Amino acid sequence: MSDKKLFSEFTSPTRQDWLDKIQVDLKGADFQKKLVWKTDEGFSVQPFYMKEDLENLSTIGSEPGEFPYVRGNKAGDNNWFVRQEICSESAAEANKKALNVLGKGVDSLGFKVPGEQLNAEYVQTLLDGIYCDCVELNFKVCPKHALELAQILVSYFASKGYDPARINASIDFDPIKGMIMKGMDTESLISTGKALIETVKDYPGFKVISVNGSALSDSGAYIVQELGYSLAWGAEYMKRLSDEGVAGNEIARRIKFNMGISTNYFMEIAKFRAARMLWSKIAGEFAGNDKEACKACIHAKTSYYNMTLFDSYVNLLRSQTETMSAAIAGVNSITVTPFDAAYEKPDEFSERIARNQQLLLKEESHFDKVVDPAGGSYYIEVLTDSLAAEAWKIFLKVQDGGGIVEYAKKGLVQDDIVASDTKRHTLAAQSREFILGTNQFPNFTENSDGKTPVSCCCKCAKEEGPYKGISTSRLSSEFEALRLTTEKAAKQPVAFMLTIGNLVWRQARAQFSCNFLASAGYKVIDNLGFATVEEGVDAAMKAGADVVVICSSDDEYAQYAIPAYNCLAGKALFVVAGNPACAEELKAAGIENFIHVKVNQLETLKLFNQKLGI
Image 1 (spheres, rainbow, N blue to C red):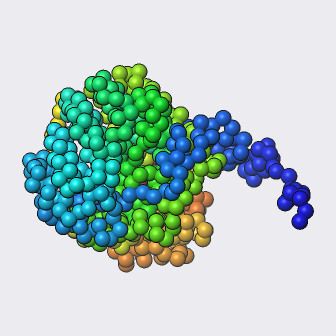
Image 2: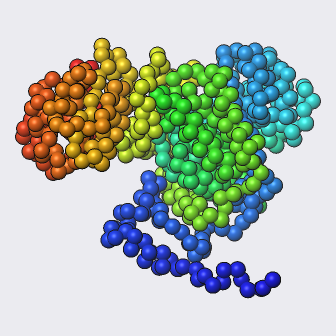
Image 3: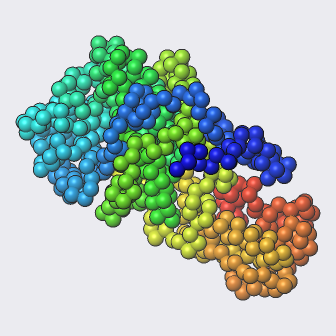
């Protein structure tokens, strides 16, 4: 066989070669405007990357399982715990459900323990029949009861003769979350972390300090905000407990990061990689030479913020890609939020599907076999480095401001997250942030069938404190409220597409208009086209139209729009699909309603409902 390199006759194109080719294809269009993505994370993404872009990146140079763990905490495989949250009223019910799901692929359980019911008997009943050294156990309890729970659990494990080294468990002790999310004065509870760590000192796999960045993600935070604040959050616990005399490496080993997963697929892969890298840097300042303690333990949970009530099966598509990104990024455990969580307590069917979404990735796609498959991708490596740089800016800003507790007291974290949430709701209202099945491509014939929005599957305390909290809603909530209002009307509005003129334009605008109006729950009637406006208006009246949308080309609106409006004679709401050059002329003739990509879809639909008396 020849030792000549395969394909040696082909030369590798340079960056300039690619740019020259792109400029030809753009035909004079602005490269920056057309192809460069201005992210919400504070940096721009180029349309292509090359090997030279990896030079000097902070993400390059280590292997899986090696410090700074950007490529994962393990070198051998990419296995993760499949967690299911158990929401039940009693310990016996929770235990029964846990035993049932453990036989269905779950190897991690999440229990919410009511503080007023907590005692040794409760824990005994809750864990009865569960082999605690074969499954990961996670507990949520009021921070005031966390130490008591830890003491009871340690006593229980000892009474059963478990090897402490085989216990994987966590207690969601996070007083800072109460400050940020509810404005509660829980700062004094942070010092309890010292006693918690002392209580579980013989259990190396027992995490007792939590950083709940997922709470920010589910409140509308952008990825860089969740990452930057989570790092500052973890650093605050490290500093506070170090000041209490706890060894830095011991604190680091007891922290678990609970993080959300948005639908920004590649960015989420980069986020988890960047999180491990940056946390190893922070933890290393406290843990010294103990590199093992610098591994970030990350639990990932699919988003609740982007779930929808209508067309809820689309939630499966969202949560599946979210789960994929977290798995590829090498997190320690994952919870998939059941697709119906936005409108009811998840039932047996939705919970089974949620479990199987992870099992498919493991058993059929083998995502658990290969560590950091995204490593080396020019795009992912640059994203990881860029995201890390922007998150680090937030981290340093918080440190300069006295730490995240001081930031929370001043309401700065809360204001930042609420501002992002407000921005995202505005973009969704303008159809600039897509919600599939809600503001884009809704199910035309769907009815709510009595579904109403809920906040969560468990009863949550509504305590408030002296500081600002964060109060947000799912991204689709305003569209859902509008559609539910439309459903309650005495008559479902009928929107009729008066398609006329240029075939391409009338079809495109009819499709756009149908999607636009169906988002409010209107019955939409599309048509192949009419020879005259009179024929179209007559057909609209026979169909019982409440809204008539004329769909044509910009050039032809000057010919068709005013005659159609006059022919309709106020018998229905008249709408022009588009923003033609003759719009001022049409307005002068009395035409008020225009729908196109630049209008605020939500506000326009609310106005239409108002005009229709809904």
